[in-house]
Image 1 (cartoon, rainbow, N blue to C red):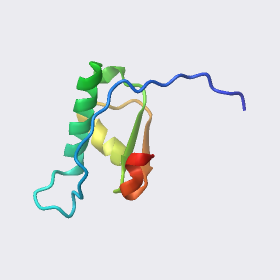
Image 2 (image 1 turned 90 degrees about the vertical axis):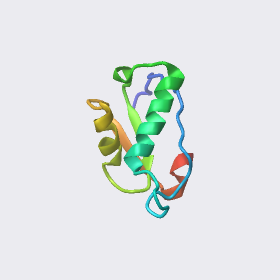
Image 3 (image 1 turned 180 degrees about the vertical axis):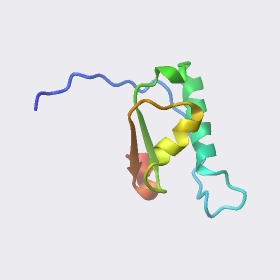
Length: 92
């Protein structure tokens, strides 16, 4: 297989507090956490969401949560990869 020459840039970062949404009372739903993180990342890099070409979503809940989280934010028609590794997902 020939090497890929694609360059990838991470130009904005958005984080939320580490928590167990299903166990903490009045904790936000995971989609709320995604909206908060994505909004912060887009604010950080001053880029419009329509310029995003790829998304990698780490979660501990199951399949399709990247799509389920990003579609309501108007982020779709791009490749979205879901990464599941429980609490260690943030280190992937």
